[in-house]
Amino acid sequence: MVNQVLELAESRIADLKAKPFCELTCLPEYDTEEVTNGAEAVIVAVWKDVLDEHELRIVVQVYRRIPFGIRVLETSGFRISDSGELNTLTDSDIDEFN
Image (cartoon, rainbow, N blue to C red; front, side, top):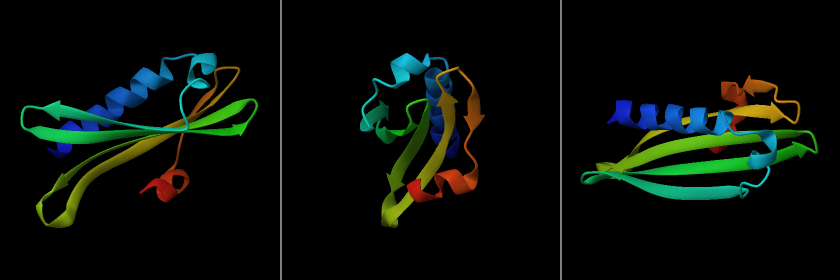
């Protein structure tokens, strides 16, 4: 299950990184989606923060709740400028999302 969560997070990040800045600006500030794989369901959450008129922060969090309140969680993201420059977020950049 951990691998599925990690792979889904990496896939979603790759899909978003492939989009142009102008398309990313049209994303909602926060969105969630439930993705099912057989009987298992995971939640994919995407945040978009406008840092200024030339830069966005995109964060993807994928998690699955398992018994006893435990979650399998993967969070990652990137910054993108209107010139297309991409920078991967550090752990401290995404701490507020975990």
